[in-house]
Image (cartoon, rainbow, N blue to C red; front, top):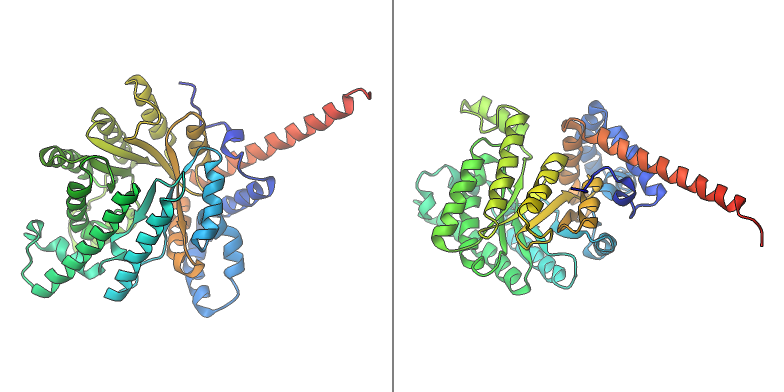
Length: 409
């Protein structure tokens, strides 16, 4: 393979020197875990006090990881990415507020985003959080009730509430199917994940008959998820629908381990990272081996996993832009992976959230924590941006020297 993730000229072609310098500075500060930890604790408090910190956040972490505060602002970022063959997974990044009225509003916002995405050439997917349209405590109840897999509930009120959640999700998927926009259902904590998995199967069975519209997210840092993927596939074959999965490593590891320890049950998390990596790469192979039955979004910043997936496509003679294979990374991270995949003809996107600064603070805090906790992630970003800035400086110097050496006419 000629694919390489070390080509910084391709990776950062869409960024100016000023933008690259800002990215290098931000990732440099994130490289200090104590600094990120302090920021994660203090920033939400400062936002609530009304102190003038919006400008600082907007120019730093918000600009790095978020498309904009509105769809219109985000459209400029999406168009810019599209110029380099990069697609977009659009995420209405506002965290859920409790209450039926707020859940209905979130449904309407997701539908608005779908309608917008359908008008854009490079926005094939949107992301949906079930916690945006359902009460967290309801999901906990549904997750723990032993016979709720049948959809039957002992309490009429909670049964009716769950039916409203189902109707909201149906409304979202129905519009998405009409507009040919994929819906990616986010994964959540293990203690609310089961009803989300069951709801996703319901929606796939309805909308994934001819093409894949609905995707569920599988977190491979859980030791049971590889078997779950195989079971999921078996159900899809039995019921005659295309299985849609977004495979990720995961986002709630520390929270999962802490809760398991406090409540005295076995942790659902893998023994260590090597087990997560092994299951993730096995899941990629399984999905590609079953490419006719499974539509897969390979969502990872791990360079080996992306390279291995690309190699498998070549080994099996599968086109780089096959409709059932898509790569994705978060906006603001791993441009060396995204843009080099795009240049090589692979179907790849940036996960692009948008929303008011105050509302997307929880998302931004997770990005700060993630970059601090992933071993080597921020260091890699700093090295890549520094390498590209040096390359540009050297190229500019060479061009200037060549211009001086050119004989006058």
